[in-house]
Image 1: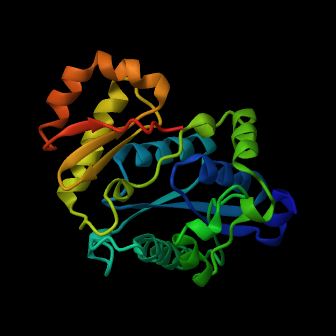
Image 2: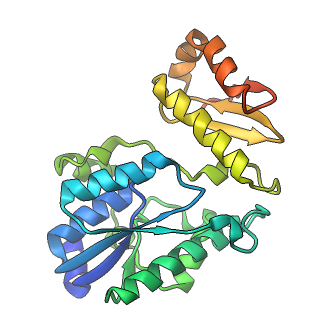
Image 3: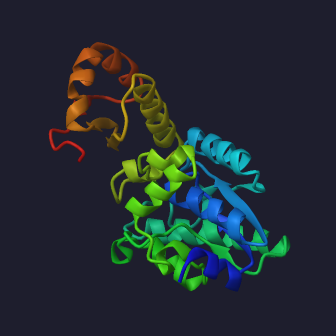
Length: 248
């Protein structure tokens, strides 16, 4: 099946939109092939501000409708306790909120950006999408991440080379409670490293300590700004260390 054929079958569809590579390309395809579509972005404590800004920028670029929903994700049962199934509970709450809003707006089907490269068995949140009957056209059309980036570049989408970015909650180890303060520290720390030129990195948090995961080719940049990074991050963390198992 091609995306054009998919949207012939589903001409009016809502899209769960994160501002990332996959959902951005899906929104582009929906604008091109669907008769009517609307993107829904859920703003919670788990999403950094730049993701919302990217979602707004991309929707403007495509002249697509964007509905921004707010959700206090830390009030959802089992989420702030951060169990191994946290992603399941989080995804179910987020997509339930989108489904409700989309149904009120007259959209009979909800789509997400899962692609053919995603390992479904390794993602607990996928079970929630299945339970809620969310469709994944990129996966159904056998489009891989590499293809999506290539097609996005051809379409002049600024997201084509955007690094993968998991939600802020993933920086806190399973079993350690999630708080607003920990999420805020993570976002502030990562925003600062972004401002210094770092890309595709993580600031992991555990019991008040920060562990930096960066690509090997950015270690020299880290050493260059070592003192500034320590000064900035130690306002939020007890210690700051470098993970020698670099991101690849």
